[in-house]
Image (cartoon, rainbow, N blue to C red; front, side, top):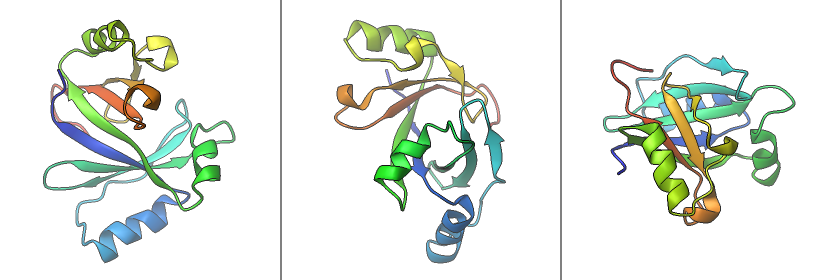
Length: 141
């Protein structure tokens, strides 16, 4: 069912500091611009890798879902992993049929790549928050 690993989401209290780490310490050369997703309560910046991406996410606003994560992990850390799927609704239905809890009431929303996404609760995924993203049809961030 799952396709390729699209990205690893990394929560951070400062995208700017994280960008410096990926650029200056790890040698990343292709780093996108920081942009806001207020409807999801996050700032986002993608670091392109040869085979995937790192999605840096920082809280945007007081109601950001990242606030609790960063309270427990003040320096930030791995937040989620994202796999591509051919059909987001079929993936959601498959997860639910297997007893997994799909967050947001199972309703797909548009993610940072501009494609529909769902999140599957870590309790059903070996302790890892899993994002399933419909494979982009063309170019994406």
